Length: 225
Length: 394
Image 1 (spheres, rainbow over the protein chains, first blue to last red):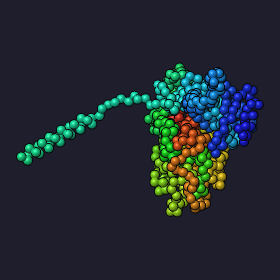
Image 2: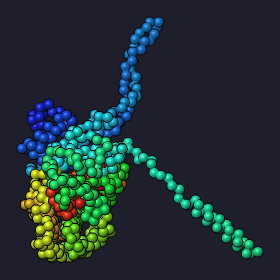
Image 3: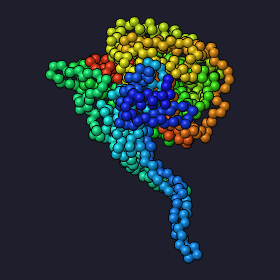
Image 4: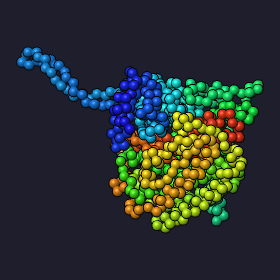
């Protein structure tokens, strides 16, 4: 089985203009992955499936991941030019001040594909694709035309994450019903507060119990006299 | 795209794509009967619907509709600790809770690099193969039941399943919701008495398989109903990600126990049964043959099981926080490849917890297998896929 570096080199040699990056996995599993630019993904996938040596004919698993916008707080040293008056003479002095800055790292949605080879019995080779952002530009190319096993799994991701897979032959919600509007697996999804409040009889029953008890206590008191 | 319709229009306007079967044109006046099989239909093994368009008795289109049992297991698991999801995995494929535990434990062990002691590996194999045996026995029983043989084969299968569930109960305290495995081992050790009881049950299993075989394999009605029905071609099976007995019935030699050799499976001698035709009969036969292979593995494992600890001494149950990273672990569950994909951000809960459900993905080709057959065969073809809705809808 080739390493991810070798697979990357093979892809770049075979598919002109393919942009492939390597995503290192720090865990002990050692399953590193390849990040594909969406525009070349279908061509790369076709190559991976049809290449005689790799022969990744079996797409096992398709996963959606949500990476929300991240606010990063960092301390930055900023050089200022300050005009100071020393002994009546104006001078420009460089000063470095530490500033805390916040910047927003834009989030995205990601689709991860785990590929194996049934013919060569090796794998996994992991492909990843990212959308441009989480709100409007959520299109990724569908790999269902290459591997049919993505059909339901991409539908599931479309349903639960809202990634629109262009080129999917039958992109509909899979698990949620058709009239449903949101995407429940997103990290910022909140369950709608839409239940109908219907008061139960508890208060009424309690009031009557109390009345009943009061009445019986009074009755007993009356009988004792 | 946002306002998609499921009912009649989806059946009528079936989109075309690569590697899909050609549409069958209705004969005669072209009038179709649209039938919703399910969600409450005894053959759907739970709540599942197939919108079928019929030309007389012939199936012209078929759309599976999912989600009736959807509870977003993956989202729930992202909100709780790693260990807290272990009992919940029992509820995925509730016929085979042990293998669900195993797949999850294997994925976490890949993520953290924990070692599993030898005795625990043997216990996993013993329980895993018992699970496979009772799953195959009852799935054959259900298939024959749906064919109209009401009672007998299913009761024979459940008689054996009962013995195996009793063993589960003695060991884990529960018949089905076992919650047995832990990251780096198993929860409780098996006593010598339990192992003896298991040996006794396993010694009786070959007789049951022979009985089942004699009862069913050469039955004329079964052969007439299943041979040549629901044929799945090998290249489509691989391309559509079909796994497990269904893939092997189409003649593809791919058993993850052999390919990955996870756990200690490469120590055991067993064969991988393969089919020629990929029809319902082959799927039935492969399951029957796999039951025999499971007995072989069980006999070897019960002979060789060593003493020793059942948990990795370094394993932490409380305050368990894997280092950032990700891992995909998969096993050969009775229904196919069951995988767990975990992403850790260093916290106590998984950042992403994904299940690769074999039951759902094996249904990708349901329409392909059913087109052109009679509506009565749909029930058989669907039964031969062997699904559990708890895993399909998650």
